Length: 337
Image (cartoon, rainbow, N blue to C red; front, side, top):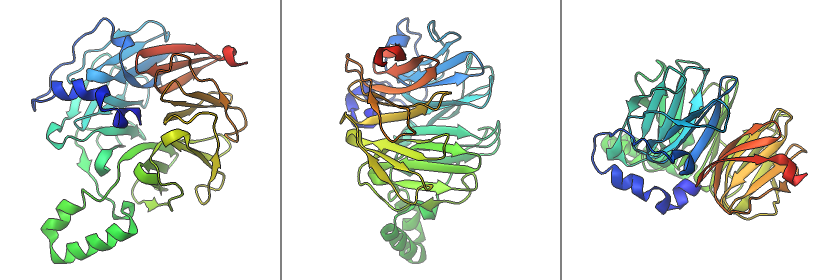
């Protein structure tokens, strides 16, 4: 992913977080033109975007943006709202932030700079039950709205070879077992939720599925040895995942088998999302932007001429609201028609 691969993109964030105590994000007049990593709808008309140096931006029209006061300067990677008021954002330093007023103010629920590990995605089933995942196997769960977060380890997410190694250690050296189990899991990059089912993708072709809201997990057979950074379930029930060097895969049998979908671009792909009409969109590095109107069987190239990395987006009728390495961008779909 752009954030993981390009160290320069967050080098300044690392410099700013050399101290172990969190610092309030600076209010920047040009925050909407800086690196932003995720954007979501909030209620019927609102939007929230997150990005570098703890920036969180809010808008009611997708054009005018105001920066919220945030108690950290860590790079934020993902944001999720359960409704118009309750939302969470996660990022580097295993940061977890929470709002109860639609994003106007944010409270710090977790900040672990000593771990030097980023969280990459967050999801809440309701205002109480949620999970956050990230690099190096980070996996936290909460059942009280984030008042407390529990680090969670699932043996079934470990590869078969590493599972045997851990089983031996657990019997012979319990202390070493606790240390080693943190090093055998891949990066967890993204998850999607459909009712009680969760699908999670990550490093080195990792994919896993839970059918009980994350209580138990099944690691799926690897079908690609590169990292996967995005996953989406279509209205027709197909699963699409995307990752390094323009690789996209489609499953129409709930992940039992996969077919590769060939794209006219080779850039690393960062996100997948759909509009209300069921059209699919993929964003990626080097301005990569693609659209599908046939449930992911093929994609039309809409890549942007400026060549800037696009991290995520939201479909707004005949426009796309995109977050990029140089901020927010509204792109009309009519240009490609």
